[in-house]
Image (tube, rainbow, N blue to C red; front, side):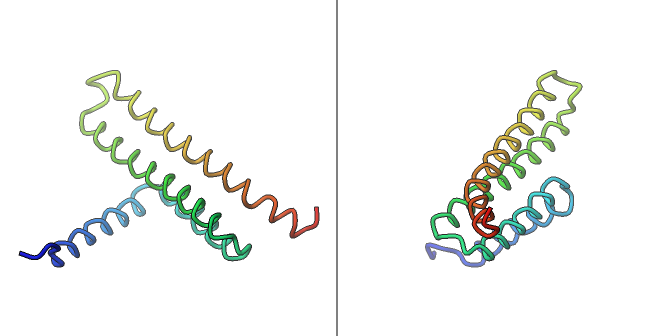
Amino acid sequence: MPIIDLKRLVKSFGYSFKGLVYAAKEEQNFRIHLFFVFIIVVLMVLFKVSVSETMILIVCMSLVLIAELVNSIFERIVDILKPRIHSYAKAVKDMMAATVLVATISAVIVGAIIFVPKVVALFNI
């Protein structure tokens, strides 16, 4: 038996891609985050950010997208359990939304630290 079963690996990637497509189709907030990822990538190219800045931005963008995916997963699970069953259900959903908010605010701060000086230099403000 080979160490890596390529057929199984390709199947796994297929499931992962289906999950991303599902999130993009069904989750408005995920689409909003993807839109901003696209904007940031365009800005990264336009401003020719350094390798270290690129790595930091990629980590920030990934964390926001991951937080949004995990939030969506928890919302689905809690919805299955029906929020009426336990008062913690709403708290779980709210805390997951807060997780996305914290990740997003942190990413915006990092983006501002990286891009504001570049914009200022561009316009000689």
